[in-house]
Length: 134
Image (cartoon, rainbow, N blue to C red; front, side):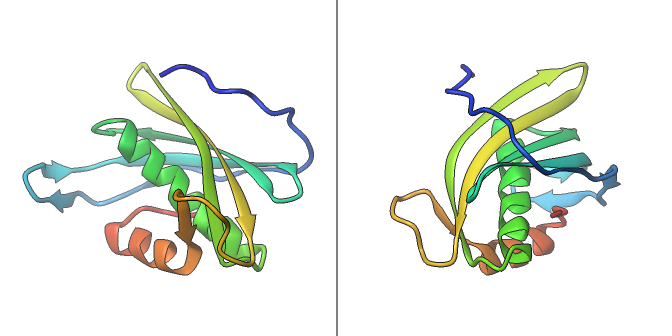
């Protein structure tokens, strides 16, 4: 995947430790046993936030993007917002570790665009799937 336009980094950074998950049965996928290896959150500018995630055992880029989406949803709730809008996600794999670099905007009201998420619903769905959030 090609790198999208990078934004200058600013302010707050938080890194969480590794979290392992029990195998999740996915229809047609067999046992899926991802290892969630942490979330780094970087505030870029006001409502623009960068999420860097790492995991093992991803099946594809979408698993990594979903982990980042879960982090973005929880972060929005922590900051008192109800919504997030996906800007971009880049995924790389090396040595069995998948890394995602995602950018979201967070907002109190539903933002314009088709790539928006309802933070409460997303966090609930992530919990049901066993995907950790911040």
